[in-house]
Every structure is written in C-alpha cells, then in structure tokens.
Image (cartoon, rainbow, N blue to C red; front, side, top):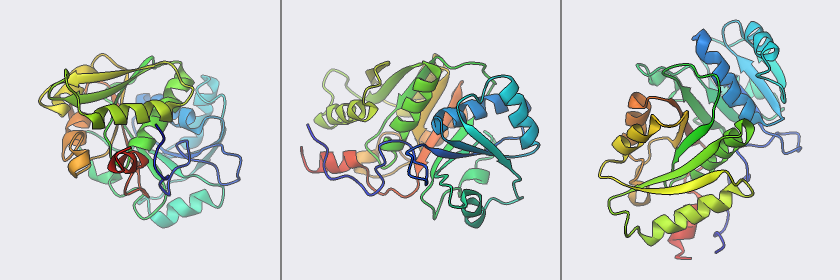
Length: 279
C-alpha cells in the first residue's frame, strides 16, 4: 500500500538542519523547575539526534555544563542563548539565524498554566514539542503514543521514534475504538501508515484499545509508561479521536511525562490524503 502525494511538510524526520546535512536542529526552552530540566534536555537531545541543540532559559549555560558532566548531552552540538521575557516569532527567527532550528522543545508550560506556550510556532514552520512533567524521571524505557489521522501524526510518530531510538525504549502505537473486535478500515490504514513511518525501527507494537472515552483510556494507561506522546487538540471528522479537549485532558491528568506535538505548517497530513483517496 503506497501513500498518496506527500504533503508540503514531509521531511521524513521531525525536522532537518538548514545546512543540508539532514541533522535536526532543536531549540529547547527550559522550564524554571530545576529537577525537571534533565528530562527536558534528554528529550531535546534525542530529537536533535546528533544535530544542533540550542538551550535557552535561566542559567542555561550552567544547566548545559551540568548536563554534559552527567552525560545527558553526549551526541549533540550544544549552544545556549538568553531568552527574552516574551518569546516572539522574530526572536525564534533570530535564534535560528540561518542555522536551521525547525523544532522547538517548549518546557515552560505548567499543568496549571497552558497559555504561556500556546502561540509558539504559530506563523512559522516549526514543529513544537511541549514537555509537561508531574515528577522528574531519570530514564525512559517505554512510550505510549496515541495516534489520530490528523495533521500532526507524522510529527508525533517521528518524535516518538527519535526518543525511543535514543533511549532504547519500547513504543506502543495506541488507538481507542468503541468496538475493538471490528475496527474500521480507516484504523487499519492509520496503523499501517504509522508502521511505514517508523521505517526500520522495530521496538514497537500496535494496540487497538476498546473504550468509550479516549482521554480517560489514555490517562489510565499512561501510568504504565514513562512518557506519553500525542498530537495537540484537533477537530474534524477524521480527527474525532484525540480531538477537542482530549489532548488537554490527558496532559492535565496523566501520571507520567506528557509530550504534545504540533507541526505548525501542516493542515492535512499524508495519511488523511491516503485515506481520502480510498487507497
């Protein structure tokens, strides 16, 4: 089964460096929570995958120095920059400075205050990954990845694959249906698409889970995983799963580290084109 025509945003990975090497470039906006910063840097370094990582936040130089001493940043080129009081599109462009930093890992969001990160990446081509932690964790061994046939599915799978590969973790592609005995053809197509997107990565499984409330099911299962990775809130017929407030409910109630992923320059994913063409 072959996908339909590629969407304009189809790099094959989360993001590629502007120097043409194919290495991701990542900007990490650190939180003010000291214990959580190691996890934030681990996430950003995994996504960077040997490329360039720019870290910004209070005492970022000291944070980077400590992370290096603790072997958190072993396979990336790291720089640090001061962060202004307000992160704007212009500042994001200036930080990139032609180097190519198309992925932003934004860890400033807290469970009680979502608005601070809401506009990051809007009006840019950035893929935005928010990191929200309930508690710091020292290592990652498992990822729960709820998927939907929406515009962010490519980036969700790419981010999950990068994290799982970097941490030698197991990854579960997770989809909630009302009747697990007879999932629709669209579900089977979506799972096949995700498997194709994962490429040669083999440490994963597909899980069609029966439940009436997707958010409740994701939150319930999250307690058994170190990380949950899902797309931001979506709407529309093909996006009814992980839609509306589901993503917000999950990041508000899940008991593990939650990553929400948004590909800001995408309106329709390849999988939607694939399903829409009936192939």
